[in-house]
Image 1 (cartoon, rainbow, N blue to C red):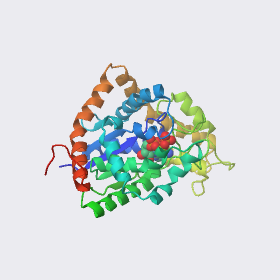
Image 2: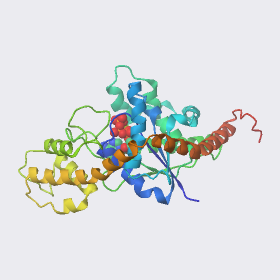
Image 3: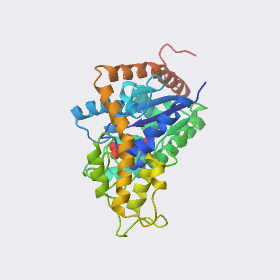
Image 4: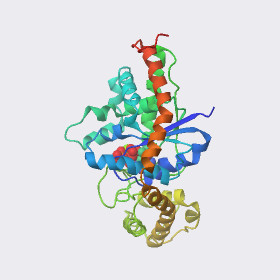
Length: 329
Ligand code: ATP
Ligand code: MG
């Protein structure tokens, strides 16, 4: 039997190059070696306010982008998190074994709560829900970007604490980071990671940005005041562009010579990105013009994963001494 892989993306905005290079690209590459489940994590998205009409369309758009980026729905299950009630159920059970101090330490919580007038409890609980997503399917490998490493560490701690208190129940998962592109930074500010939820027209390259927009954004990307590229001593902005180019097409970075003017360098980076995005955008167009296709994919994904989720919920309830209807052992 193949080991299971689980990962997800929030439908909280426009998917960007960081999501692709940090997550989706990696998923597509490893999917055939594992039994893969890829979730559109809408319950995570509502930890900060989402416009309802916008959210429901972003859920379908995110699913379509998974496929456009190379996830094969015949092979991998694509699922909307809220359609499997086990995610929320297990999150509650895990909440009850998670010390509050563990959650207060999370850097994502600190960063996201700074931007809110009122901090919803969901923002604090976010990593427990993420632990539930992973443990619900007894996933072995979790391919994510570097920003999620701390949450993965917490997931392992929660699984181990639960196993110690209630007996071996959960597999303790491993984090899988991509070798290049694990942390893509914002084009407007290379000291913060590229994020869907950060506003600013020049912050992120969206996967659906047309080529001319990609070129413009890269041309405007923040760099330092050196006259040309110095591969031995790159500032944060140039280093970020270098990583982007390397992840899109390593041949481009090999062609960069010391002293190359920033304008010329940026043009090469832009062409590498445009060439990477072109087939994704083409495929996206194809699948979104086929009526009912995305809903059928999501239904199939749901049917495949539901029995796994229900099995874990029963096992966890039994371990904790909760009542399982019709389920005397
Ligand atoms: P949000 O701002 O709403 O949190 P996000 O851009 O951080 O959105 P998520 O949906 O939280 O995206 O994350 C989806 C996946 O993309 C995760 O595996 C995450 O680690 C990865 N990821 C997100 N941003 C980056 C980035 N800048 N570089 C590399 N990987 C990233
Ligand atoms: Mg995020």
